[in-house]
Length: 355
Ligand code: ADP
Image (cartoon, rainbow, N blue to C red; front, side):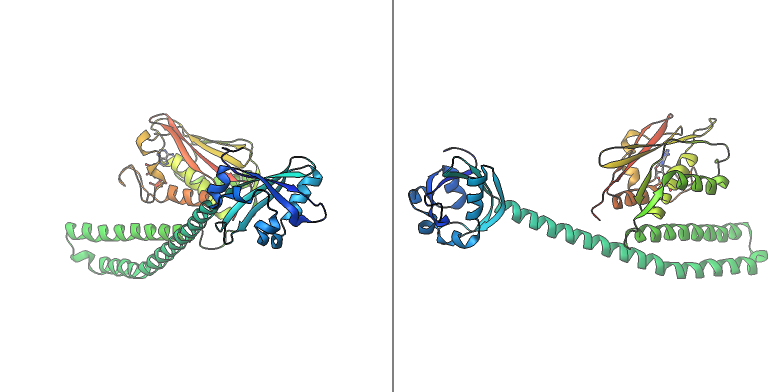
């Protein structure tokens, strides 16, 4: 015990009717290191003599409990300090040695508690900053809508009014402005949706995932490529979650599977689920063009796209959206893929959430 990496003290209860008579009988080096006090000098003294403050702390009856019950009693975290002993948080356990002696094992966890407190403060700050950022994004995108609508309607008016006077170059130019403005409108709408997720308290609803998928697939019936696609859905659970968010997530993944389909093959999409101890795991697998290994992480960042707009329509927000929905569900999202073979997107949803 002398060189054990935990603080150790042994006490003897000299008078069983007087808890103050618990008397120091042994201690070790670590005990001195953790308390900043060489405890060996107290050997032979009772608690009443050596550390009278302890009498007011209501812990000696737990020493007695260990003695009587012959069990180890966990005192949890005890804050202690006096003129002799460093003030700090000690994690303490008392165990039974024989019918008169108990051993006390402790660790000074003050530094750990301080680090945890600092970390909690930092997390709160980061969360607050993220919330502010989202608010700014929302307000900025909302306010951008209005001038954009004016530009669009004024340009359309100009086209109607002056089209006969414009040469081919002029007509092309005006059409280009209208197309760009329409695209910017979609981008801003997406950005607004993105910043809105997680702003409100997330409703926690009971969701039959099979039903949600059937609904969504029938809504997608008119989407490009859907009529040719073969969509199969395995066993699906009923879970607790944020319905709008999850619907959007499946919709993004399925739309992407259709959009990034391989040439000359019937698109096949397979959706599966499985249960783990803590999470539900879902997968959406396609037989599309696949994704190069070096981009597998990047694609979940906002505005990250691997193709030009001429090749594939899109704003690069869809998967960032999915990631945000999954973060709200305290899960993870990732993809496995082979170029030319297809991609499988996986995501998990915590069964019990803290938020
Ligand atoms: P968008 O579809 O608007 O481009 P996303 O955030 O949904 O934006 O996707 C980001 C990028 O990830 C896409 O541009 C594409 O390059 C790649 N990607 C996403 N899903 C698939 C998929 N099923 N197959 C191949 N590539 C994909």
